[in-house]
Length: 332
Image (cartoon, rainbow, N blue to C red):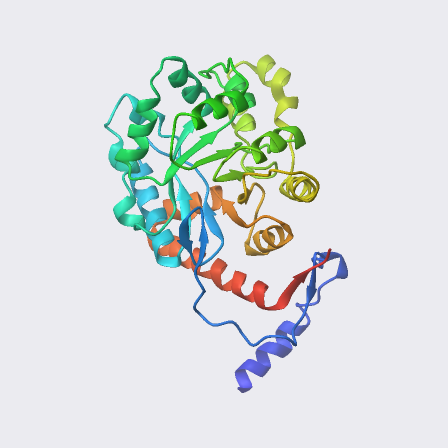
């Protein structure tokens, strides 16, 4: 006790905080709940069981460290009760050498959401060549619950090895929906989507839309950094600075849910620029549709270090989310 009091005295002078640092998105309500328990009630999302509203957004596969990274991610999803999307599974369409990097169903468990991933350009080509069965086979062999399609026209255009998109992505998505019977998630890759794109997707029978909004990892900027030609980097740089942040997208979707009929996509994965459980809690609470929040680079960072480091990070985020749920109310 004396040591603790001594620490309080010594630290009191260092712990002053300015009102400029206050997070004014919330009302703090300390009178209404006890400290939360260390268990969470399960809920259904994407047709699977979740305990916390978190999601590992699609990242990597087919690289030297991918197997260990993905295995660590799948283990932590199983342990804490949330789902994940794989990185692009394109390599598996023609080459099974990297299959073990993606073969995670036994690790994540049968009751956790687990989705394969392809780019819109690959899906477009496979439909054009009447090879949709290869997409079905990919989902089946991975025992995935469905497929994520990442839509990335800026990235593909800037990428030195990028593919050209010849059909409006929403048309390709509509065509695929006619040919499959598994759930489909559509996501961007770091720049989000504007209102007309969101409107078109909301009226399709999708399992979910993942925002991948502006403010986190930006794959257009990443591809710019890979370009050797400085003139091309300079020419295309403005494209990397365009997008929609997650809060703007939540507000757009909320308005559409209130004002439009026949909204068929009823779940959201809010990702892009989410730094911690506080951001995730705020955005999911604002959403009128059922929502979870996704992160990518921060999971990748800890998963690369090792499972123990990843476990401790996720444990801290889950405990923080419980505290936010108990004591924070968002300001409308």
